[in-house]
Length: 113
Image 1 (cartoon, rainbow, N blue to C red):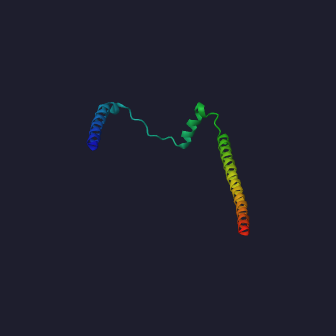
Image 2: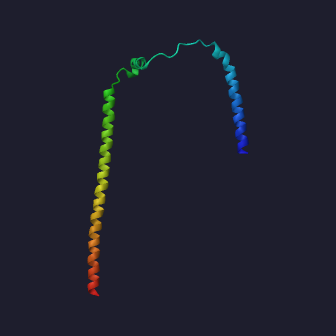
Image 3: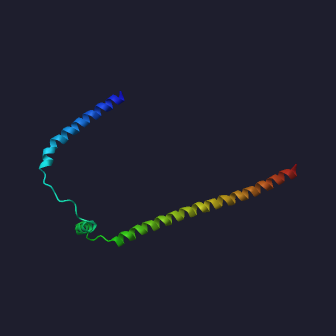
């Protein structure tokens, strides 16, 4: 049942799309031909630089911002790993002392018997 419904939806969509394309063909034929795209990368960047948005754009400032964000990220990561390492060392010390306490408890029990 699901396959039948999906086939019907596909067929109707294809028919509607074909009708739209066939209606627009005369309008497309009347459009004037344009010259092929011949602007290279230099022309592209020069046109972008003339836009008002990019007149005050500086790659150096962008690079500074990116590097500062990376530095902050690395510092945060370093701080987090340092905290994890400190907690692991504390757990290790507690475990070491608790093992020593267990040893002496065992010795006391054995001497009392």
